[in-house]
Image (cartoon, rainbow, N blue to C red; front, top):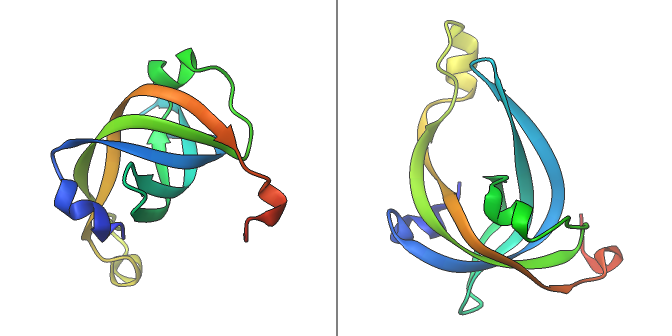
Length: 123
């Protein structure tokens, strides 16, 4: 869980992170693109999460294509959501109970501010 983001819930803030990969999701017959960011920091340098998935938006599209290891700076709104298994299988409900987590939404002002050598970053 990204509980360090809890204090920013509902607020817009600035972040930096390391771009790691592009991804996709399917929900309700709709397909979308996502981005995996690692080492999420506040603009003050305080670590907020080891990783987060964020929707690929026009802000990321306008900034161009990213490569693994690019350092990205952007603003986003922190929001909460419920994660866990909601289906009919009791075993899965016990294995993945519902809980509150935090995510980044509406990323804006995206820009590449540098690159790190990913061979030096632990997996």
